[in-house]
Length: 124
Image (cartoon, rainbow, N blue to C red; front, side, top):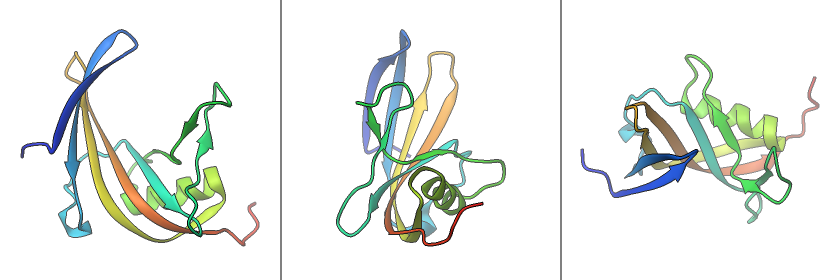
C-alpha cells in the first residue's frame, strides 16, 4: 500500500521516515501493532490539548501508548480519562503514521477524531 504522504525529519540525531495513511472508516483499520493512539478531540467546539512533561509551553494532543492487547478504542478512552478527565462519546478514524527509524525499527501511531464530554464520575 502506498502512503498518502511521505516525509522525513531528524529526532535525536536520527533521520526518521514518516508515512501517513488516511483511514476514514473503522472497518478499514489495518491490523498493525499500534504503539500509540492520539485524538483530536471536540469538547463543545473546543480542542483539548495537554502541556508537555518537560516544558509548560509545549502542547500536545492527548493520547499515548497502547497497553498489551488493548484496542484503539480502549486506548483512546483510557487516555482521555487519564489526561483530560473526559469521556469519549464517539470517535472516527483519521489515519495513521508509520515511522521507520534508521535501524529499521517500525512505529505505528493512530490518530482519531473524538467527540468528548466532561467525565462526571469521580476517580478512585
